Length: 371
Image 1 (tube, helix red, strand yellow):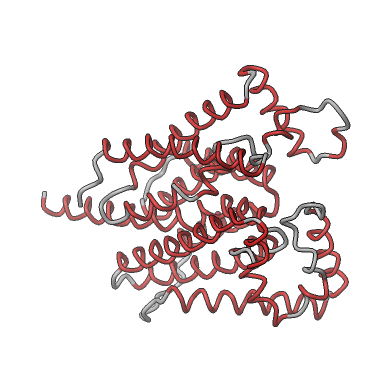
Image 2: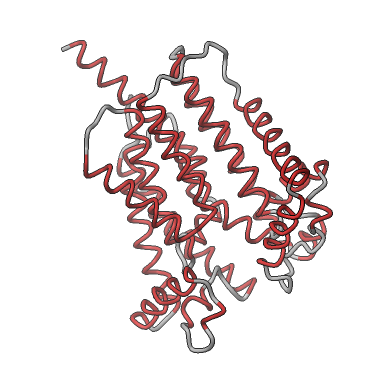
């Protein structure tokens, strides 16, 4: 098992750095804005009581940095350099010839290139989430008793929950599941795992969940839909005003709702052709998601206990996506891009890192047997 040479991965990151600056410049040129640059660097010079505590905190952080650099271009260059350095050192250990293409594709996805390198709450959330996933993966695979890692892991979770609220809730549930997997015998399975079938099952469970929620607690579900409906800016051209309670409560629309969270409609593309980039990104992320989980399943081979854990994890992550990121992201195609940033460490980095850790553990065990 040979890792990708550090110089090759470093060269990729240098090219990625230039791509971030190019894409950021083009985005600002075409749309006149990029992420939350204007809001978060402008500062609270007017009425800040209309903003939530997370937004107020983000404004304080980025407006402080803006006062240091005095220029948005210099600020973005600084953030890009800092975030690229952090991400490089987080990922390089888990990249080799078996998964390099998946890492390369996900790391150049436009949602990561934009929202994790310019002023946004996603930037503040993404890197702690990545560190948390790395620590959780080591906890699951290796029999290490590192109190510092445990302290850091459980210190990150409240921070993540503060910054992204309900979008961070799957990470909390993952922490609970990991403890169960580590200390409770959950049994074994001998069936062959199929990623697509597991995802279809997760989709059906999610659709059934919303149906039952609306059937038994219709007033609560209506308030929930109205909350998300009005949480998005209805003056934005990316807002889907047709996705009201009547539409969202129809279970038959659930497939179309998930489609809307991934792709803009034809009318939206014709109105703003640059949204074709979102289409390309969605296909890339779907390909990487399926490929990374398939790689993990292949690595497990005939380990029946690990296969059952993977089945539960993938089902949980699929349900999390459909019920949270997919459902809420359908209201606004622009916001759905942001939500992908919150999901990528859980949905894509997690299987890639698990796969690499399992292969590393197998290599170490084999080496110890030879010695």
